[in-house]
Length: 250
Ligand SMILES: NC(=O)c1ccc[n+]([C@@H]2O[C@H](COP(=O)([O-])OP(=O)(O)OC[C@H]3O[C@@H](n4cnc5c(N)ncnc54)[C@H](OP(=O)(O)O)[C@@H]3O)[C@@H](O)[C@H]2O)c1
Image (cartoon, rainbow, N blue to C red; front, side, top):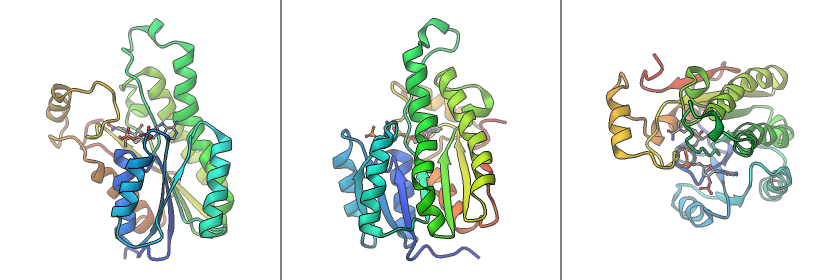
Protein backbone atom coordinates (compact mmCIF):
# COMPACT_ATOMS: atom_id res chain seq x y z
CA UNK A 1 0.00 0.00 0.00
CA UNK A 2 1.63 3.32 -1.03
CA UNK A 3 2.10 5.72 1.85
CA UNK A 4 1.10 9.37 1.88
CA UNK A 5 3.88 11.94 2.01
CA UNK A 6 1.92 14.36 4.21
CA UNK A 7 4.25 16.02 6.73
CA UNK A 8 7.32 14.70 4.87
CA UNK A 9 10.12 17.13 4.05
CA UNK A 10 11.84 16.68 0.70
CA UNK A 11 14.88 18.52 -0.66
CA UNK A 12 15.35 18.43 -4.44
CA UNK A 13 18.83 19.58 -5.40
CA UNK A 14 18.62 20.67 -9.02
CA UNK A 15 14.90 21.28 -8.51
CA UNK A 16 14.95 24.07 -11.07
CA UNK A 17 15.79 21.58 -13.86
CA UNK A 18 13.50 19.34 -15.89
CA UNK A 19 13.60 16.13 -13.82
CA UNK A 20 14.03 18.01 -10.53
CA UNK A 21 11.01 20.25 -11.15
CA UNK A 22 8.79 17.32 -12.15
CA UNK A 23 9.92 15.49 -9.00
CA UNK A 24 9.20 18.50 -6.79
CA UNK A 25 5.70 18.69 -8.29
CA UNK A 26 4.88 14.99 -7.74
CA UNK A 27 6.16 15.13 -4.15
CA UNK A 28 4.11 18.26 -3.43
CA UNK A 29 1.02 16.62 -5.00
CA UNK A 30 1.60 13.65 -2.68
CA UNK A 31 1.50 15.99 0.31
CA UNK A 32 5.20 16.67 0.99
CA UNK A 33 6.73 20.03 1.75
CA UNK A 34 9.43 20.61 -0.84
CA UNK A 35 12.61 22.69 -0.99
CA UNK A 36 14.09 23.19 -4.45
CA UNK A 37 17.57 24.50 -5.06
CA UNK A 38 18.73 26.75 -7.85
CA UNK A 39 21.96 28.29 -9.05
CA UNK A 40 22.39 31.95 -9.95
CA UNK A 41 21.19 30.98 -13.45
CA UNK A 42 17.83 29.63 -12.33
CA UNK A 43 16.55 31.60 -9.32
CA UNK A 44 13.51 32.86 -11.25
CA UNK A 45 12.59 29.41 -12.57
CA UNK A 46 12.79 27.97 -9.05
CA UNK A 47 10.63 30.75 -7.59
CA UNK A 48 7.99 30.28 -10.30
CA UNK A 49 7.99 26.53 -9.69
CA UNK A 50 7.68 26.82 -5.89
CA UNK A 51 4.82 29.33 -6.20
CA UNK A 52 2.93 26.91 -8.48
CA UNK A 53 3.21 23.83 -6.23
CA UNK A 54 0.16 22.60 -4.35
CA UNK A 55 0.32 22.79 -0.56
CA UNK A 56 2.26 25.27 1.53
CA UNK A 57 5.64 25.80 3.15
CA UNK A 58 7.71 25.13 0.03
CA UNK A 59 11.13 26.78 -0.21
CA UNK A 60 13.64 27.84 -2.83
CA UNK A 61 17.27 28.05 -1.77
CA UNK A 62 20.54 28.61 -3.63
CA UNK A 63 23.06 25.77 -3.91
CA UNK A 64 26.17 25.11 -5.98
CA UNK A 65 26.68 21.37 -5.74
CA UNK A 66 30.42 21.44 -6.50
CA UNK A 67 31.00 23.82 -3.57
CA UNK A 68 30.73 22.18 -0.15
CA UNK A 69 30.52 25.56 1.64
CA UNK A 70 27.39 26.25 -0.38
CA UNK A 71 25.92 22.88 0.64
CA UNK A 72 26.66 23.62 4.31
CA UNK A 73 24.91 27.00 3.96
CA UNK A 74 21.97 25.17 2.38
CA UNK A 75 21.83 22.82 5.39
CA UNK A 76 21.86 25.78 7.80
CA UNK A 77 19.06 27.49 5.87
CA UNK A 78 16.98 24.33 5.78
CA UNK A 79 17.44 23.71 9.51
CA UNK A 80 16.40 27.29 10.25
CA UNK A 81 13.13 26.76 8.35
CA UNK A 82 12.31 23.10 8.94
CA UNK A 83 14.26 21.96 12.01
CA UNK A 84 16.70 19.07 12.31
CA UNK A 85 15.02 16.30 10.28
CA UNK A 86 14.84 15.74 6.53
CA UNK A 87 12.99 12.75 5.04
CA UNK A 88 14.01 12.81 1.37
CA UNK A 89 17.03 14.09 -0.56
CA UNK A 90 16.80 13.95 -4.35
CA UNK A 91 20.08 14.55 -6.17
CA UNK A 92 18.88 15.81 -9.56
CA UNK A 93 21.61 18.38 -10.33
CA UNK A 94 24.03 17.67 -13.13
CA UNK A 95 25.48 18.96 -16.36
CA UNK A 96 27.07 17.60 -19.47
CA UNK A 97 29.01 18.67 -22.50
CA UNK A 98 29.03 16.35 -25.50
CA UNK A 99 32.44 15.04 -26.54
CA UNK A 100 32.72 12.37 -29.28
CA UNK A 101 34.14 9.28 -27.62
CA UNK A 102 36.76 8.68 -30.34
CA UNK A 103 38.19 12.19 -29.93
CA UNK A 104 40.36 11.47 -26.89
CA UNK A 105 42.14 14.84 -27.04
CA UNK A 106 38.85 16.73 -26.78
CA UNK A 107 38.15 15.22 -23.36
CA UNK A 108 40.72 17.35 -21.54
CA UNK A 109 41.62 17.35 -17.85
CA UNK A 110 39.62 20.50 -17.08
CA UNK A 111 36.41 19.00 -18.43
CA UNK A 112 37.04 15.63 -16.75
CA UNK A 113 37.59 17.31 -13.37
CA UNK A 114 34.47 19.46 -13.72
CA UNK A 115 32.42 16.43 -14.81
CA UNK A 116 33.40 14.49 -11.69
CA UNK A 117 33.19 17.51 -9.36
CA UNK A 118 29.58 18.21 -10.34
CA UNK A 119 28.20 14.82 -11.37
CA UNK A 120 29.89 12.54 -8.80
CA UNK A 121 31.49 14.53 -6.00
CA UNK A 122 28.48 16.87 -5.83
CA UNK A 123 26.02 14.03 -5.22
CA UNK A 124 28.33 12.49 -2.60
CA UNK A 125 28.93 15.84 -0.86
CA UNK A 126 25.18 16.49 -0.71
CA UNK A 127 24.59 13.10 0.93
CA UNK A 128 27.50 13.69 3.35
CA UNK A 129 26.05 17.10 4.22
CA UNK A 130 22.48 15.95 4.77
CA UNK A 131 23.13 12.50 6.32
CA UNK A 132 22.70 13.83 9.89
CA UNK A 133 19.30 15.34 9.04
CA UNK A 134 18.20 12.23 7.11
CA UNK A 135 19.22 10.03 10.06
CA UNK A 136 17.35 12.35 12.43
CA UNK A 137 14.12 11.57 10.53
CA UNK A 138 14.66 7.83 11.30
CA UNK A 139 13.12 7.10 7.88
CA UNK A 140 15.40 8.88 5.43
CA UNK A 141 15.70 8.35 1.71
CA UNK A 142 18.24 9.49 -0.87
CA UNK A 143 17.46 9.16 -4.58
CA UNK A 144 20.27 9.96 -6.97
CA UNK A 145 19.60 10.50 -10.67
CA UNK A 146 22.03 8.30 -12.55
CA UNK A 147 21.91 7.32 -16.25
CA UNK A 148 22.02 4.17 -18.33
CA UNK A 149 25.23 5.74 -19.70
CA UNK A 150 26.88 4.39 -16.55
CA UNK A 151 26.08 0.82 -17.67
CA UNK A 152 26.21 0.99 -21.46
CA UNK A 153 29.27 3.25 -21.81
CA UNK A 154 27.25 5.16 -24.41
CA UNK A 155 26.52 8.77 -23.52
CA UNK A 156 27.45 12.40 -24.01
CA UNK A 157 31.10 11.82 -23.05
CA UNK A 158 33.25 9.03 -21.62
CA UNK A 159 33.69 11.06 -18.42
CA UNK A 160 29.90 11.45 -18.07
CA UNK A 161 29.47 7.67 -18.43
CA UNK A 162 32.16 7.08 -15.80
CA UNK A 163 30.68 9.59 -13.35
CA UNK A 164 27.28 7.90 -13.61
CA UNK A 165 28.81 4.42 -13.14
CA UNK A 166 30.36 5.93 -10.02
CA UNK A 167 26.93 7.06 -8.83
CA UNK A 168 25.60 3.50 -9.16
CA UNK A 169 28.38 2.00 -7.08
CA UNK A 170 28.16 4.83 -4.52
CA UNK A 171 24.45 4.03 -4.16
CA UNK A 172 25.37 0.49 -3.10
CA UNK A 173 28.15 1.56 -0.70
CA UNK A 174 26.08 4.25 0.99
CA UNK A 175 22.99 2.05 1.23
CA UNK A 176 25.06 -0.36 3.28
CA UNK A 177 26.56 2.18 5.67
CA UNK A 178 23.51 4.43 6.12
CA UNK A 179 21.05 1.59 6.84
CA UNK A 180 18.74 1.16 8.64
CA UNK A 181 17.92 4.86 9.22
CA UNK A 182 18.40 5.95 5.59
CA UNK A 183 17.71 4.12 2.31
CA UNK A 184 19.76 5.04 -0.76
CA UNK A 185 18.33 4.51 -4.24
CA UNK A 186 19.18 5.47 -7.80
CA UNK A 187 17.07 6.07 -10.91
CA UNK A 188 18.80 5.61 -14.27
CA UNK A 189 17.02 7.22 -17.23
CA UNK A 190 17.81 6.75 -20.91
CA UNK A 191 17.00 9.79 -23.06
CA UNK A 192 14.72 12.28 -21.29
CA UNK A 193 12.97 15.14 -23.04
CA UNK A 194 14.60 18.05 -21.15
CA UNK A 195 17.17 20.68 -22.10
CA UNK A 196 19.96 18.71 -20.41
CA UNK A 197 22.27 17.99 -23.37
CA UNK A 198 23.38 21.14 -25.21
CA UNK A 199 22.75 20.84 -28.91
CA UNK A 200 20.43 17.84 -28.78
CA UNK A 201 18.33 18.37 -31.90
CA UNK A 202 14.76 17.34 -32.80
CA UNK A 203 16.40 14.92 -35.30
CA UNK A 204 18.44 13.32 -32.48
CA UNK A 205 15.29 13.01 -30.38
CA UNK A 206 13.36 11.40 -33.26
CA UNK A 207 16.16 8.88 -33.87
CA UNK A 208 16.39 8.13 -30.15
CA UNK A 209 12.64 7.55 -29.90
CA UNK A 210 12.66 5.27 -32.95
CA UNK A 211 15.53 3.17 -31.56
CA UNK A 212 13.93 2.79 -28.10
CA UNK A 213 11.73 -0.31 -27.67
CA UNK A 214 8.84 1.74 -26.19
CA UNK A 215 9.17 4.17 -29.16
CA UNK A 216 9.37 7.47 -27.33
CA UNK A 217 11.66 9.53 -25.13
CA UNK A 218 11.07 9.61 -21.40
CA UNK A 219 9.27 12.66 -20.08
CA UNK A 220 10.60 14.30 -16.93
CA UNK A 221 7.43 12.99 -15.24
CA UNK A 222 8.33 9.38 -16.16
CA UNK A 223 11.54 9.77 -14.16
CA UNK A 224 9.89 11.73 -11.34
CA UNK A 225 7.33 8.90 -10.96
CA UNK A 226 10.15 6.45 -10.33
CA UNK A 227 11.67 8.79 -7.72
CA UNK A 228 8.27 9.06 -6.04
CA UNK A 229 7.90 5.26 -6.07
CA UNK A 230 11.16 4.99 -4.12
CA UNK A 231 9.50 7.05 -1.36
CA UNK A 232 6.04 5.47 -1.47
CA UNK A 233 5.84 1.93 -2.87
CA UNK A 234 9.38 0.56 -2.77
CA UNK A 235 9.74 0.71 0.99
CA UNK A 236 11.98 -2.38 1.33
CA UNK A 237 14.44 -1.44 -1.41
CA UNK A 238 17.87 0.08 -0.79
CA UNK A 239 21.12 0.08 -2.76
CA UNK A 240 19.23 -0.49 -6.02
CA UNK A 241 19.27 1.62 -9.17
CA UNK A 242 16.03 1.47 -11.15
CA UNK A 243 16.46 1.62 -14.92
CA UNK A 244 13.66 3.74 -16.42
CA UNK A 245 14.62 3.92 -20.08
CA UNK A 246 11.76 2.47 -22.18
CA UNK A 247 14.01 -0.51 -22.86
CA UNK A 248 16.72 1.59 -24.51
CA UNK A 249 19.60 -0.25 -22.82
CA UNK A 250 18.38 -3.72 -23.83
N1 LIG B 1 17.85 14.58 -19.77
C1 LIG B 1 18.38 13.40 -20.01
O1 LIG B 1 18.32 12.88 -21.14
C2 LIG B 1 19.02 12.62 -18.90
C3 LIG B 1 19.31 11.26 -19.10
C4 LIG B 1 19.91 10.53 -18.10
C5 LIG B 1 20.22 11.14 -16.90
N2 LIG B 1 19.95 12.47 -16.71
C6 LIG B 1 20.33 13.07 -15.42
O2 LIG B 1 19.22 13.70 -14.85
C7 LIG B 1 19.66 14.76 -13.99
C8 LIG B 1 18.79 15.97 -14.25
O3 LIG B 1 18.86 16.32 -15.61
P1 LIG B 1 17.70 17.12 -16.38
O4 LIG B 1 17.41 16.34 -17.59
O5 LIG B 1 16.63 17.51 -15.44
O6 LIG B 1 18.56 18.41 -16.84
P2 LIG B 1 18.34 19.96 -16.63
O7 LIG B 1 16.96 20.35 -16.96
O8 LIG B 1 19.49 20.60 -17.34
O9 LIG B 1 18.53 20.16 -15.05
C9 LIG B 1 19.78 20.11 -14.44
C10 LIG B 1 19.68 20.76 -13.09
O10 LIG B 1 20.97 20.71 -12.46
C11 LIG B 1 21.31 22.00 -11.98
N3 LIG B 1 22.75 22.16 -11.92
C12 LIG B 1 23.64 22.03 -12.93
N4 LIG B 1 24.88 22.26 -12.48
C13 LIG B 1 24.76 22.55 -11.15
C14 LIG B 1 25.68 22.85 -10.13
N5 LIG B 1 26.99 22.93 -10.38
N6 LIG B 1 25.21 23.08 -8.88
C15 LIG B 1 23.89 23.01 -8.62
N7 LIG B 1 22.96 22.72 -9.54
C16 LIG B 1 23.40 22.49 -10.80
C17 LIG B 1 20.67 22.94 -12.99
O11 LIG B 1 20.58 24.22 -12.47
P3 LIG B 1 20.77 25.49 -13.47
O12 LIG B 1 19.58 25.43 -14.39
O13 LIG B 1 20.78 26.64 -12.57
O14 LIG B 1 22.05 25.26 -14.20
C18 LIG B 1 19.33 22.26 -13.16
O15 LIG B 1 18.46 22.57 -12.09
C19 LIG B 1 21.16 14.93 -14.28
O16 LIG B 1 21.89 14.32 -13.24
C20 LIG B 1 21.38 14.14 -15.56
O17 LIG B 1 22.69 13.59 -15.61
C21 LIG B 1 19.35 13.22 -17.69
